[in-house]
Length: 237
Image (cartoon, rainbow, N blue to C red; front, side, top):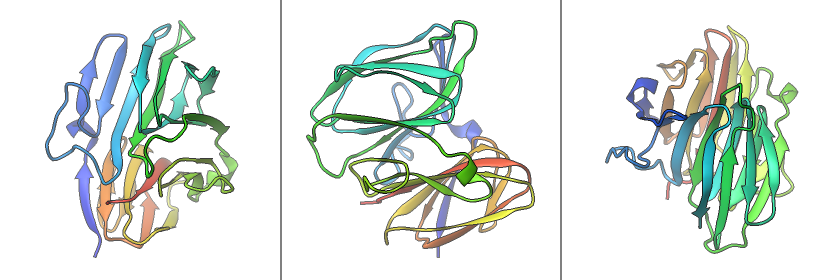
């Protein structure tokens, strides 16, 4: 039987630095909750809003798979690998920090705030060569179904990372249902509702609610209103 741990949006950690408003599903920076340090190999799920013209100065990372998903606005990225890119809403970016990188992230639009999800996953292999990848998410493929946007495989749909993890995202009309089958036995699934109203196995989730799901091999989601949902399948050990 599947085990659900619900994380309602209002229970997340919160930081307000003026230029940055961030909600932390898991312990991060000054927010610490011993019951929410990580979910398996999923270490960070931050829901960040960055004011116009502001951003994160150059800072280091190592041995982490870092994923950014643009929800609104745009992020200007620059790193020590020589990449200088802009991630727009509807795009996904991956950095394998590996042996070490430095990067900065800024909002290039002084008139509009940006909103993006920043996700960190512990890698399967340490000290890999740092790498960067960015891709437009196929919104047509997400209509009323979960479409893959990340996997461990270079030949599969979406970006790839150094971990046995799969991300799927979907846009769903009110009154529809969608199914998800776990790719690797023993993996857990973290469901994050970007918007809408979702029910799974009797559990109801609304805007920015999350659910950590263990012990499931097949899940059925029902949508009471137009909804956007991100599923993150993650190794638990």
